[in-house]
Amino acid sequence: MSIKLFLYCKLLTGFTKKQKYNINTLYKLKMLTTKEKTKIIKEVANHEKDTGSSGVQVVLLSKEIEKLVSHFKKHPKDIHSKRGLVKMVVKRKKLLACLKKESEKRYNKIIKEIGLKK
Image 1: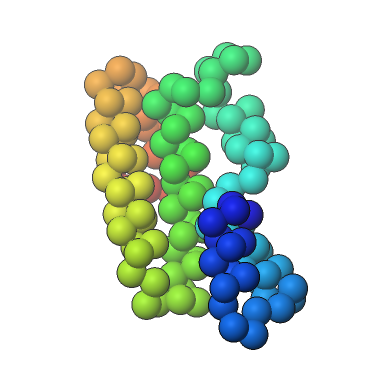
Image 2 (image 1 turned 90 degrees about the vertical axis):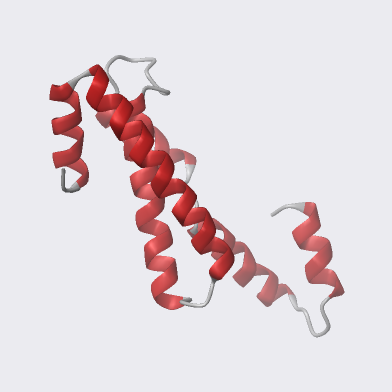
């Protein structure tokens, strides 16, 4: 948890350690853990040290988008996170276009793996 968030929580009246834990878990739900990322990278990577190719980035973004969508089912009025979601979707769309230019085969494989429509 960042220092700013911790200090903000300290300023709130009636803030307890249990609430701090709840905020901490909510913060972690929105992002992928390192273990999840490494597992995804191993499944999708072209070679051993491939972590930044457009295919890997697309799959990672898709997993983060899935997590955010499940977050919005519980918290439909979270407008600030919706903006981040839209930015992620646009970034994924651009990366998919780039991937399609590079390799049509890999593009089709990743689209099937993620479960997106063409």
